[in-house]
Image 1 (cartoon, rainbow, N blue to C red):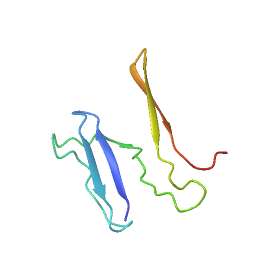
Image 2: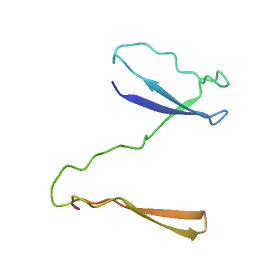
Image 3: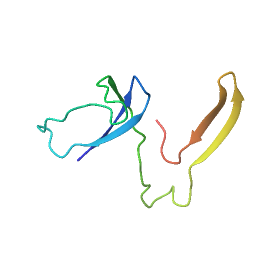
Length: 81
C-alpha cells in the first residue's frame, strides 16, 4: 500500500494519498484550493541498516552556504558503488 505525494501547482500545498488498490479510482484534487493541477513529487525514503560491518555508524550531514542559500550533503553509511 504505497503512499504517493503530490504538490498543488496552484497553491503549492503538499498532499499524501494512500492507495489501497491499484485499480481504485481516486479523484486527484487539492483539499486546500480544490485545484486538479497536481504534480507527483519524489518522496523521501525511510530505511533501516541491518546488522553487519556498518553497525554503529550513523547518518551525518554537512551544511555549507552557497548561492542558493545553504546546501546540505548527506553521508549515509553502507556500501558504495
